[in-house]
Image (cartoon, rainbow, N blue to C red; front, side, top):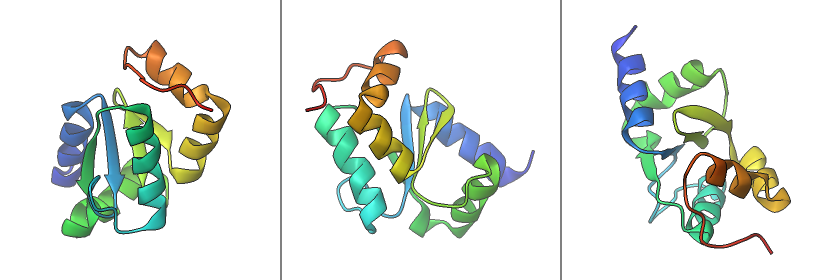
Length: 112
């Protein structure tokens, strides 16, 4: 296991929900990261944002780790969920809220 892989795994295991994103939850630096942050904030789900713009090793390493070419990347309880499109589609269908609830993560708002 490489150093960057170990760092990524430590991040993923540090919180129930982790988002590798451009920017921070408070200041997303791209629209896709902003959409994921908006969805999770709307649901009241606590999550950790990992700013890939601050660390090129993490930025490239996370793509190899998940075998997923884009950022943001959402992880729930250590499991890769997907990027912005998948997260948005799951939210709109109610599947995201159901998955979070099944994994023991409280969701404060049902999808409209």
